Image (cartoon, rainbow, N blue to C red; front, side):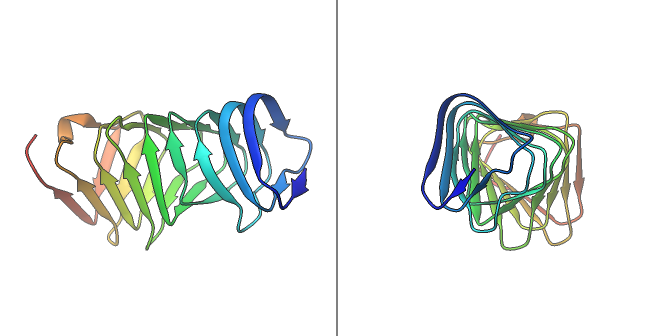
Length: 171
């Protein structure tokens, strides 16, 4: 499947394990179950993830909004631009990468991180973070716990801080 138009998944099961999914425009995942086994083309804009999406190939996700989303699979996920997680879960065997110049915001309803997150950019936590994953804040990374969040709600398997860990406010 390919094309330049907008693609919106609004229900059903969509399995792209034996066929290439090569959109050129904007993609939204609002309902259903979607499995993608190929890397998405450069320049594809995923606007929303509000349902279950399985990426079994490495992906570069630019400024993604994941509200109540479930991202799974074996592919590495690289978040570029400014991305947002709110009441979302990321699991699977791949790594979550936040490169320099990128920002990943975790909002009030939090996120479950069940894989390794490698931060070289900025991760801002406004809500809780839980899960079985490991968060590695590299020397060039900034991990911010913002007012209203608390280290009690930063409950991952392991936190390795080599960069800047900044906590503001009370809690």
